[in-house]
Length: 137
Image 1: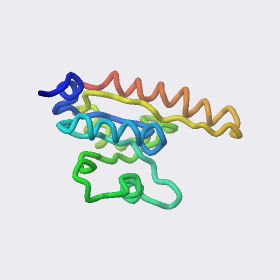
Image 2 (image 1 turned 135 degrees about the vertical axis):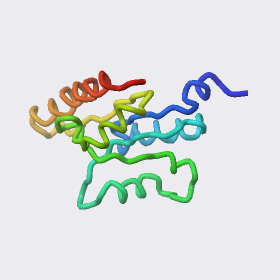
Image 3 (image 1 turned 90 degrees about the vertical axis):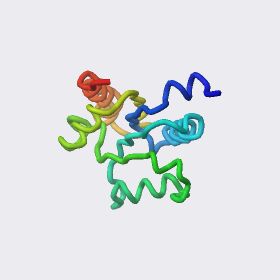
């Protein structure tokens, strides 16, 4: 018998920001193991330290042979950029298919100046909400 959580996520697509951070990794693991019938997770990722998002995804999953991680769908972007840095094609896909949004992207660099912190933590949230207003589901 499926739980309420499993029923809620069944056949749904999730758009997740901050998925490569500590909290994001825990969210991914919990959803994929607790709600195995989730359709997929669009994972907003930015290239970092000379690695493309596909390489970062492999590092994130650590065990790419585990079938549950096949539901992760990396999309290139950055909460610090307009339209989350998403290409028009990725924007259209996310807007058309997403049912649930989990925004966990943030900067925790306490040595940074206020400008980048505001851009990511405040304006990044605004950008996610703007994308949500366009989502069909």
